[in-house]
Length: 77
Image 1 (cartoon, rainbow, N blue to C red):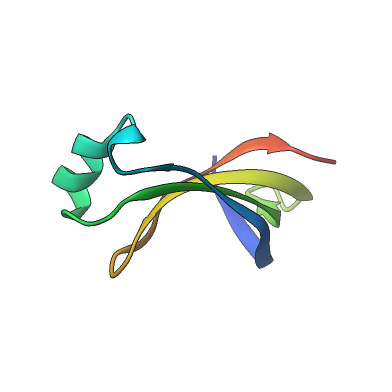
Image 2: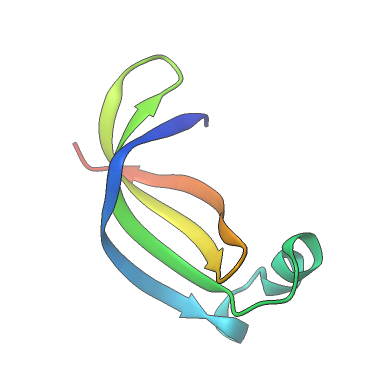
């Protein structure tokens, strides 16, 4: 699903760190070895069709690498 984040991400929570992440080998192979964390948060998003929704987002993040594999988990509105 293609989307654009509008504004900032709020209510950010850490869900998993390091070896607790299921796809950690994939992240290290594709983006490099770092201290990976899985996070979730809430943000307004604009979908490909132009509609705007509030959604819960999940993504992986590492220092020096940034946010990767961001996806919409569920719509909150």
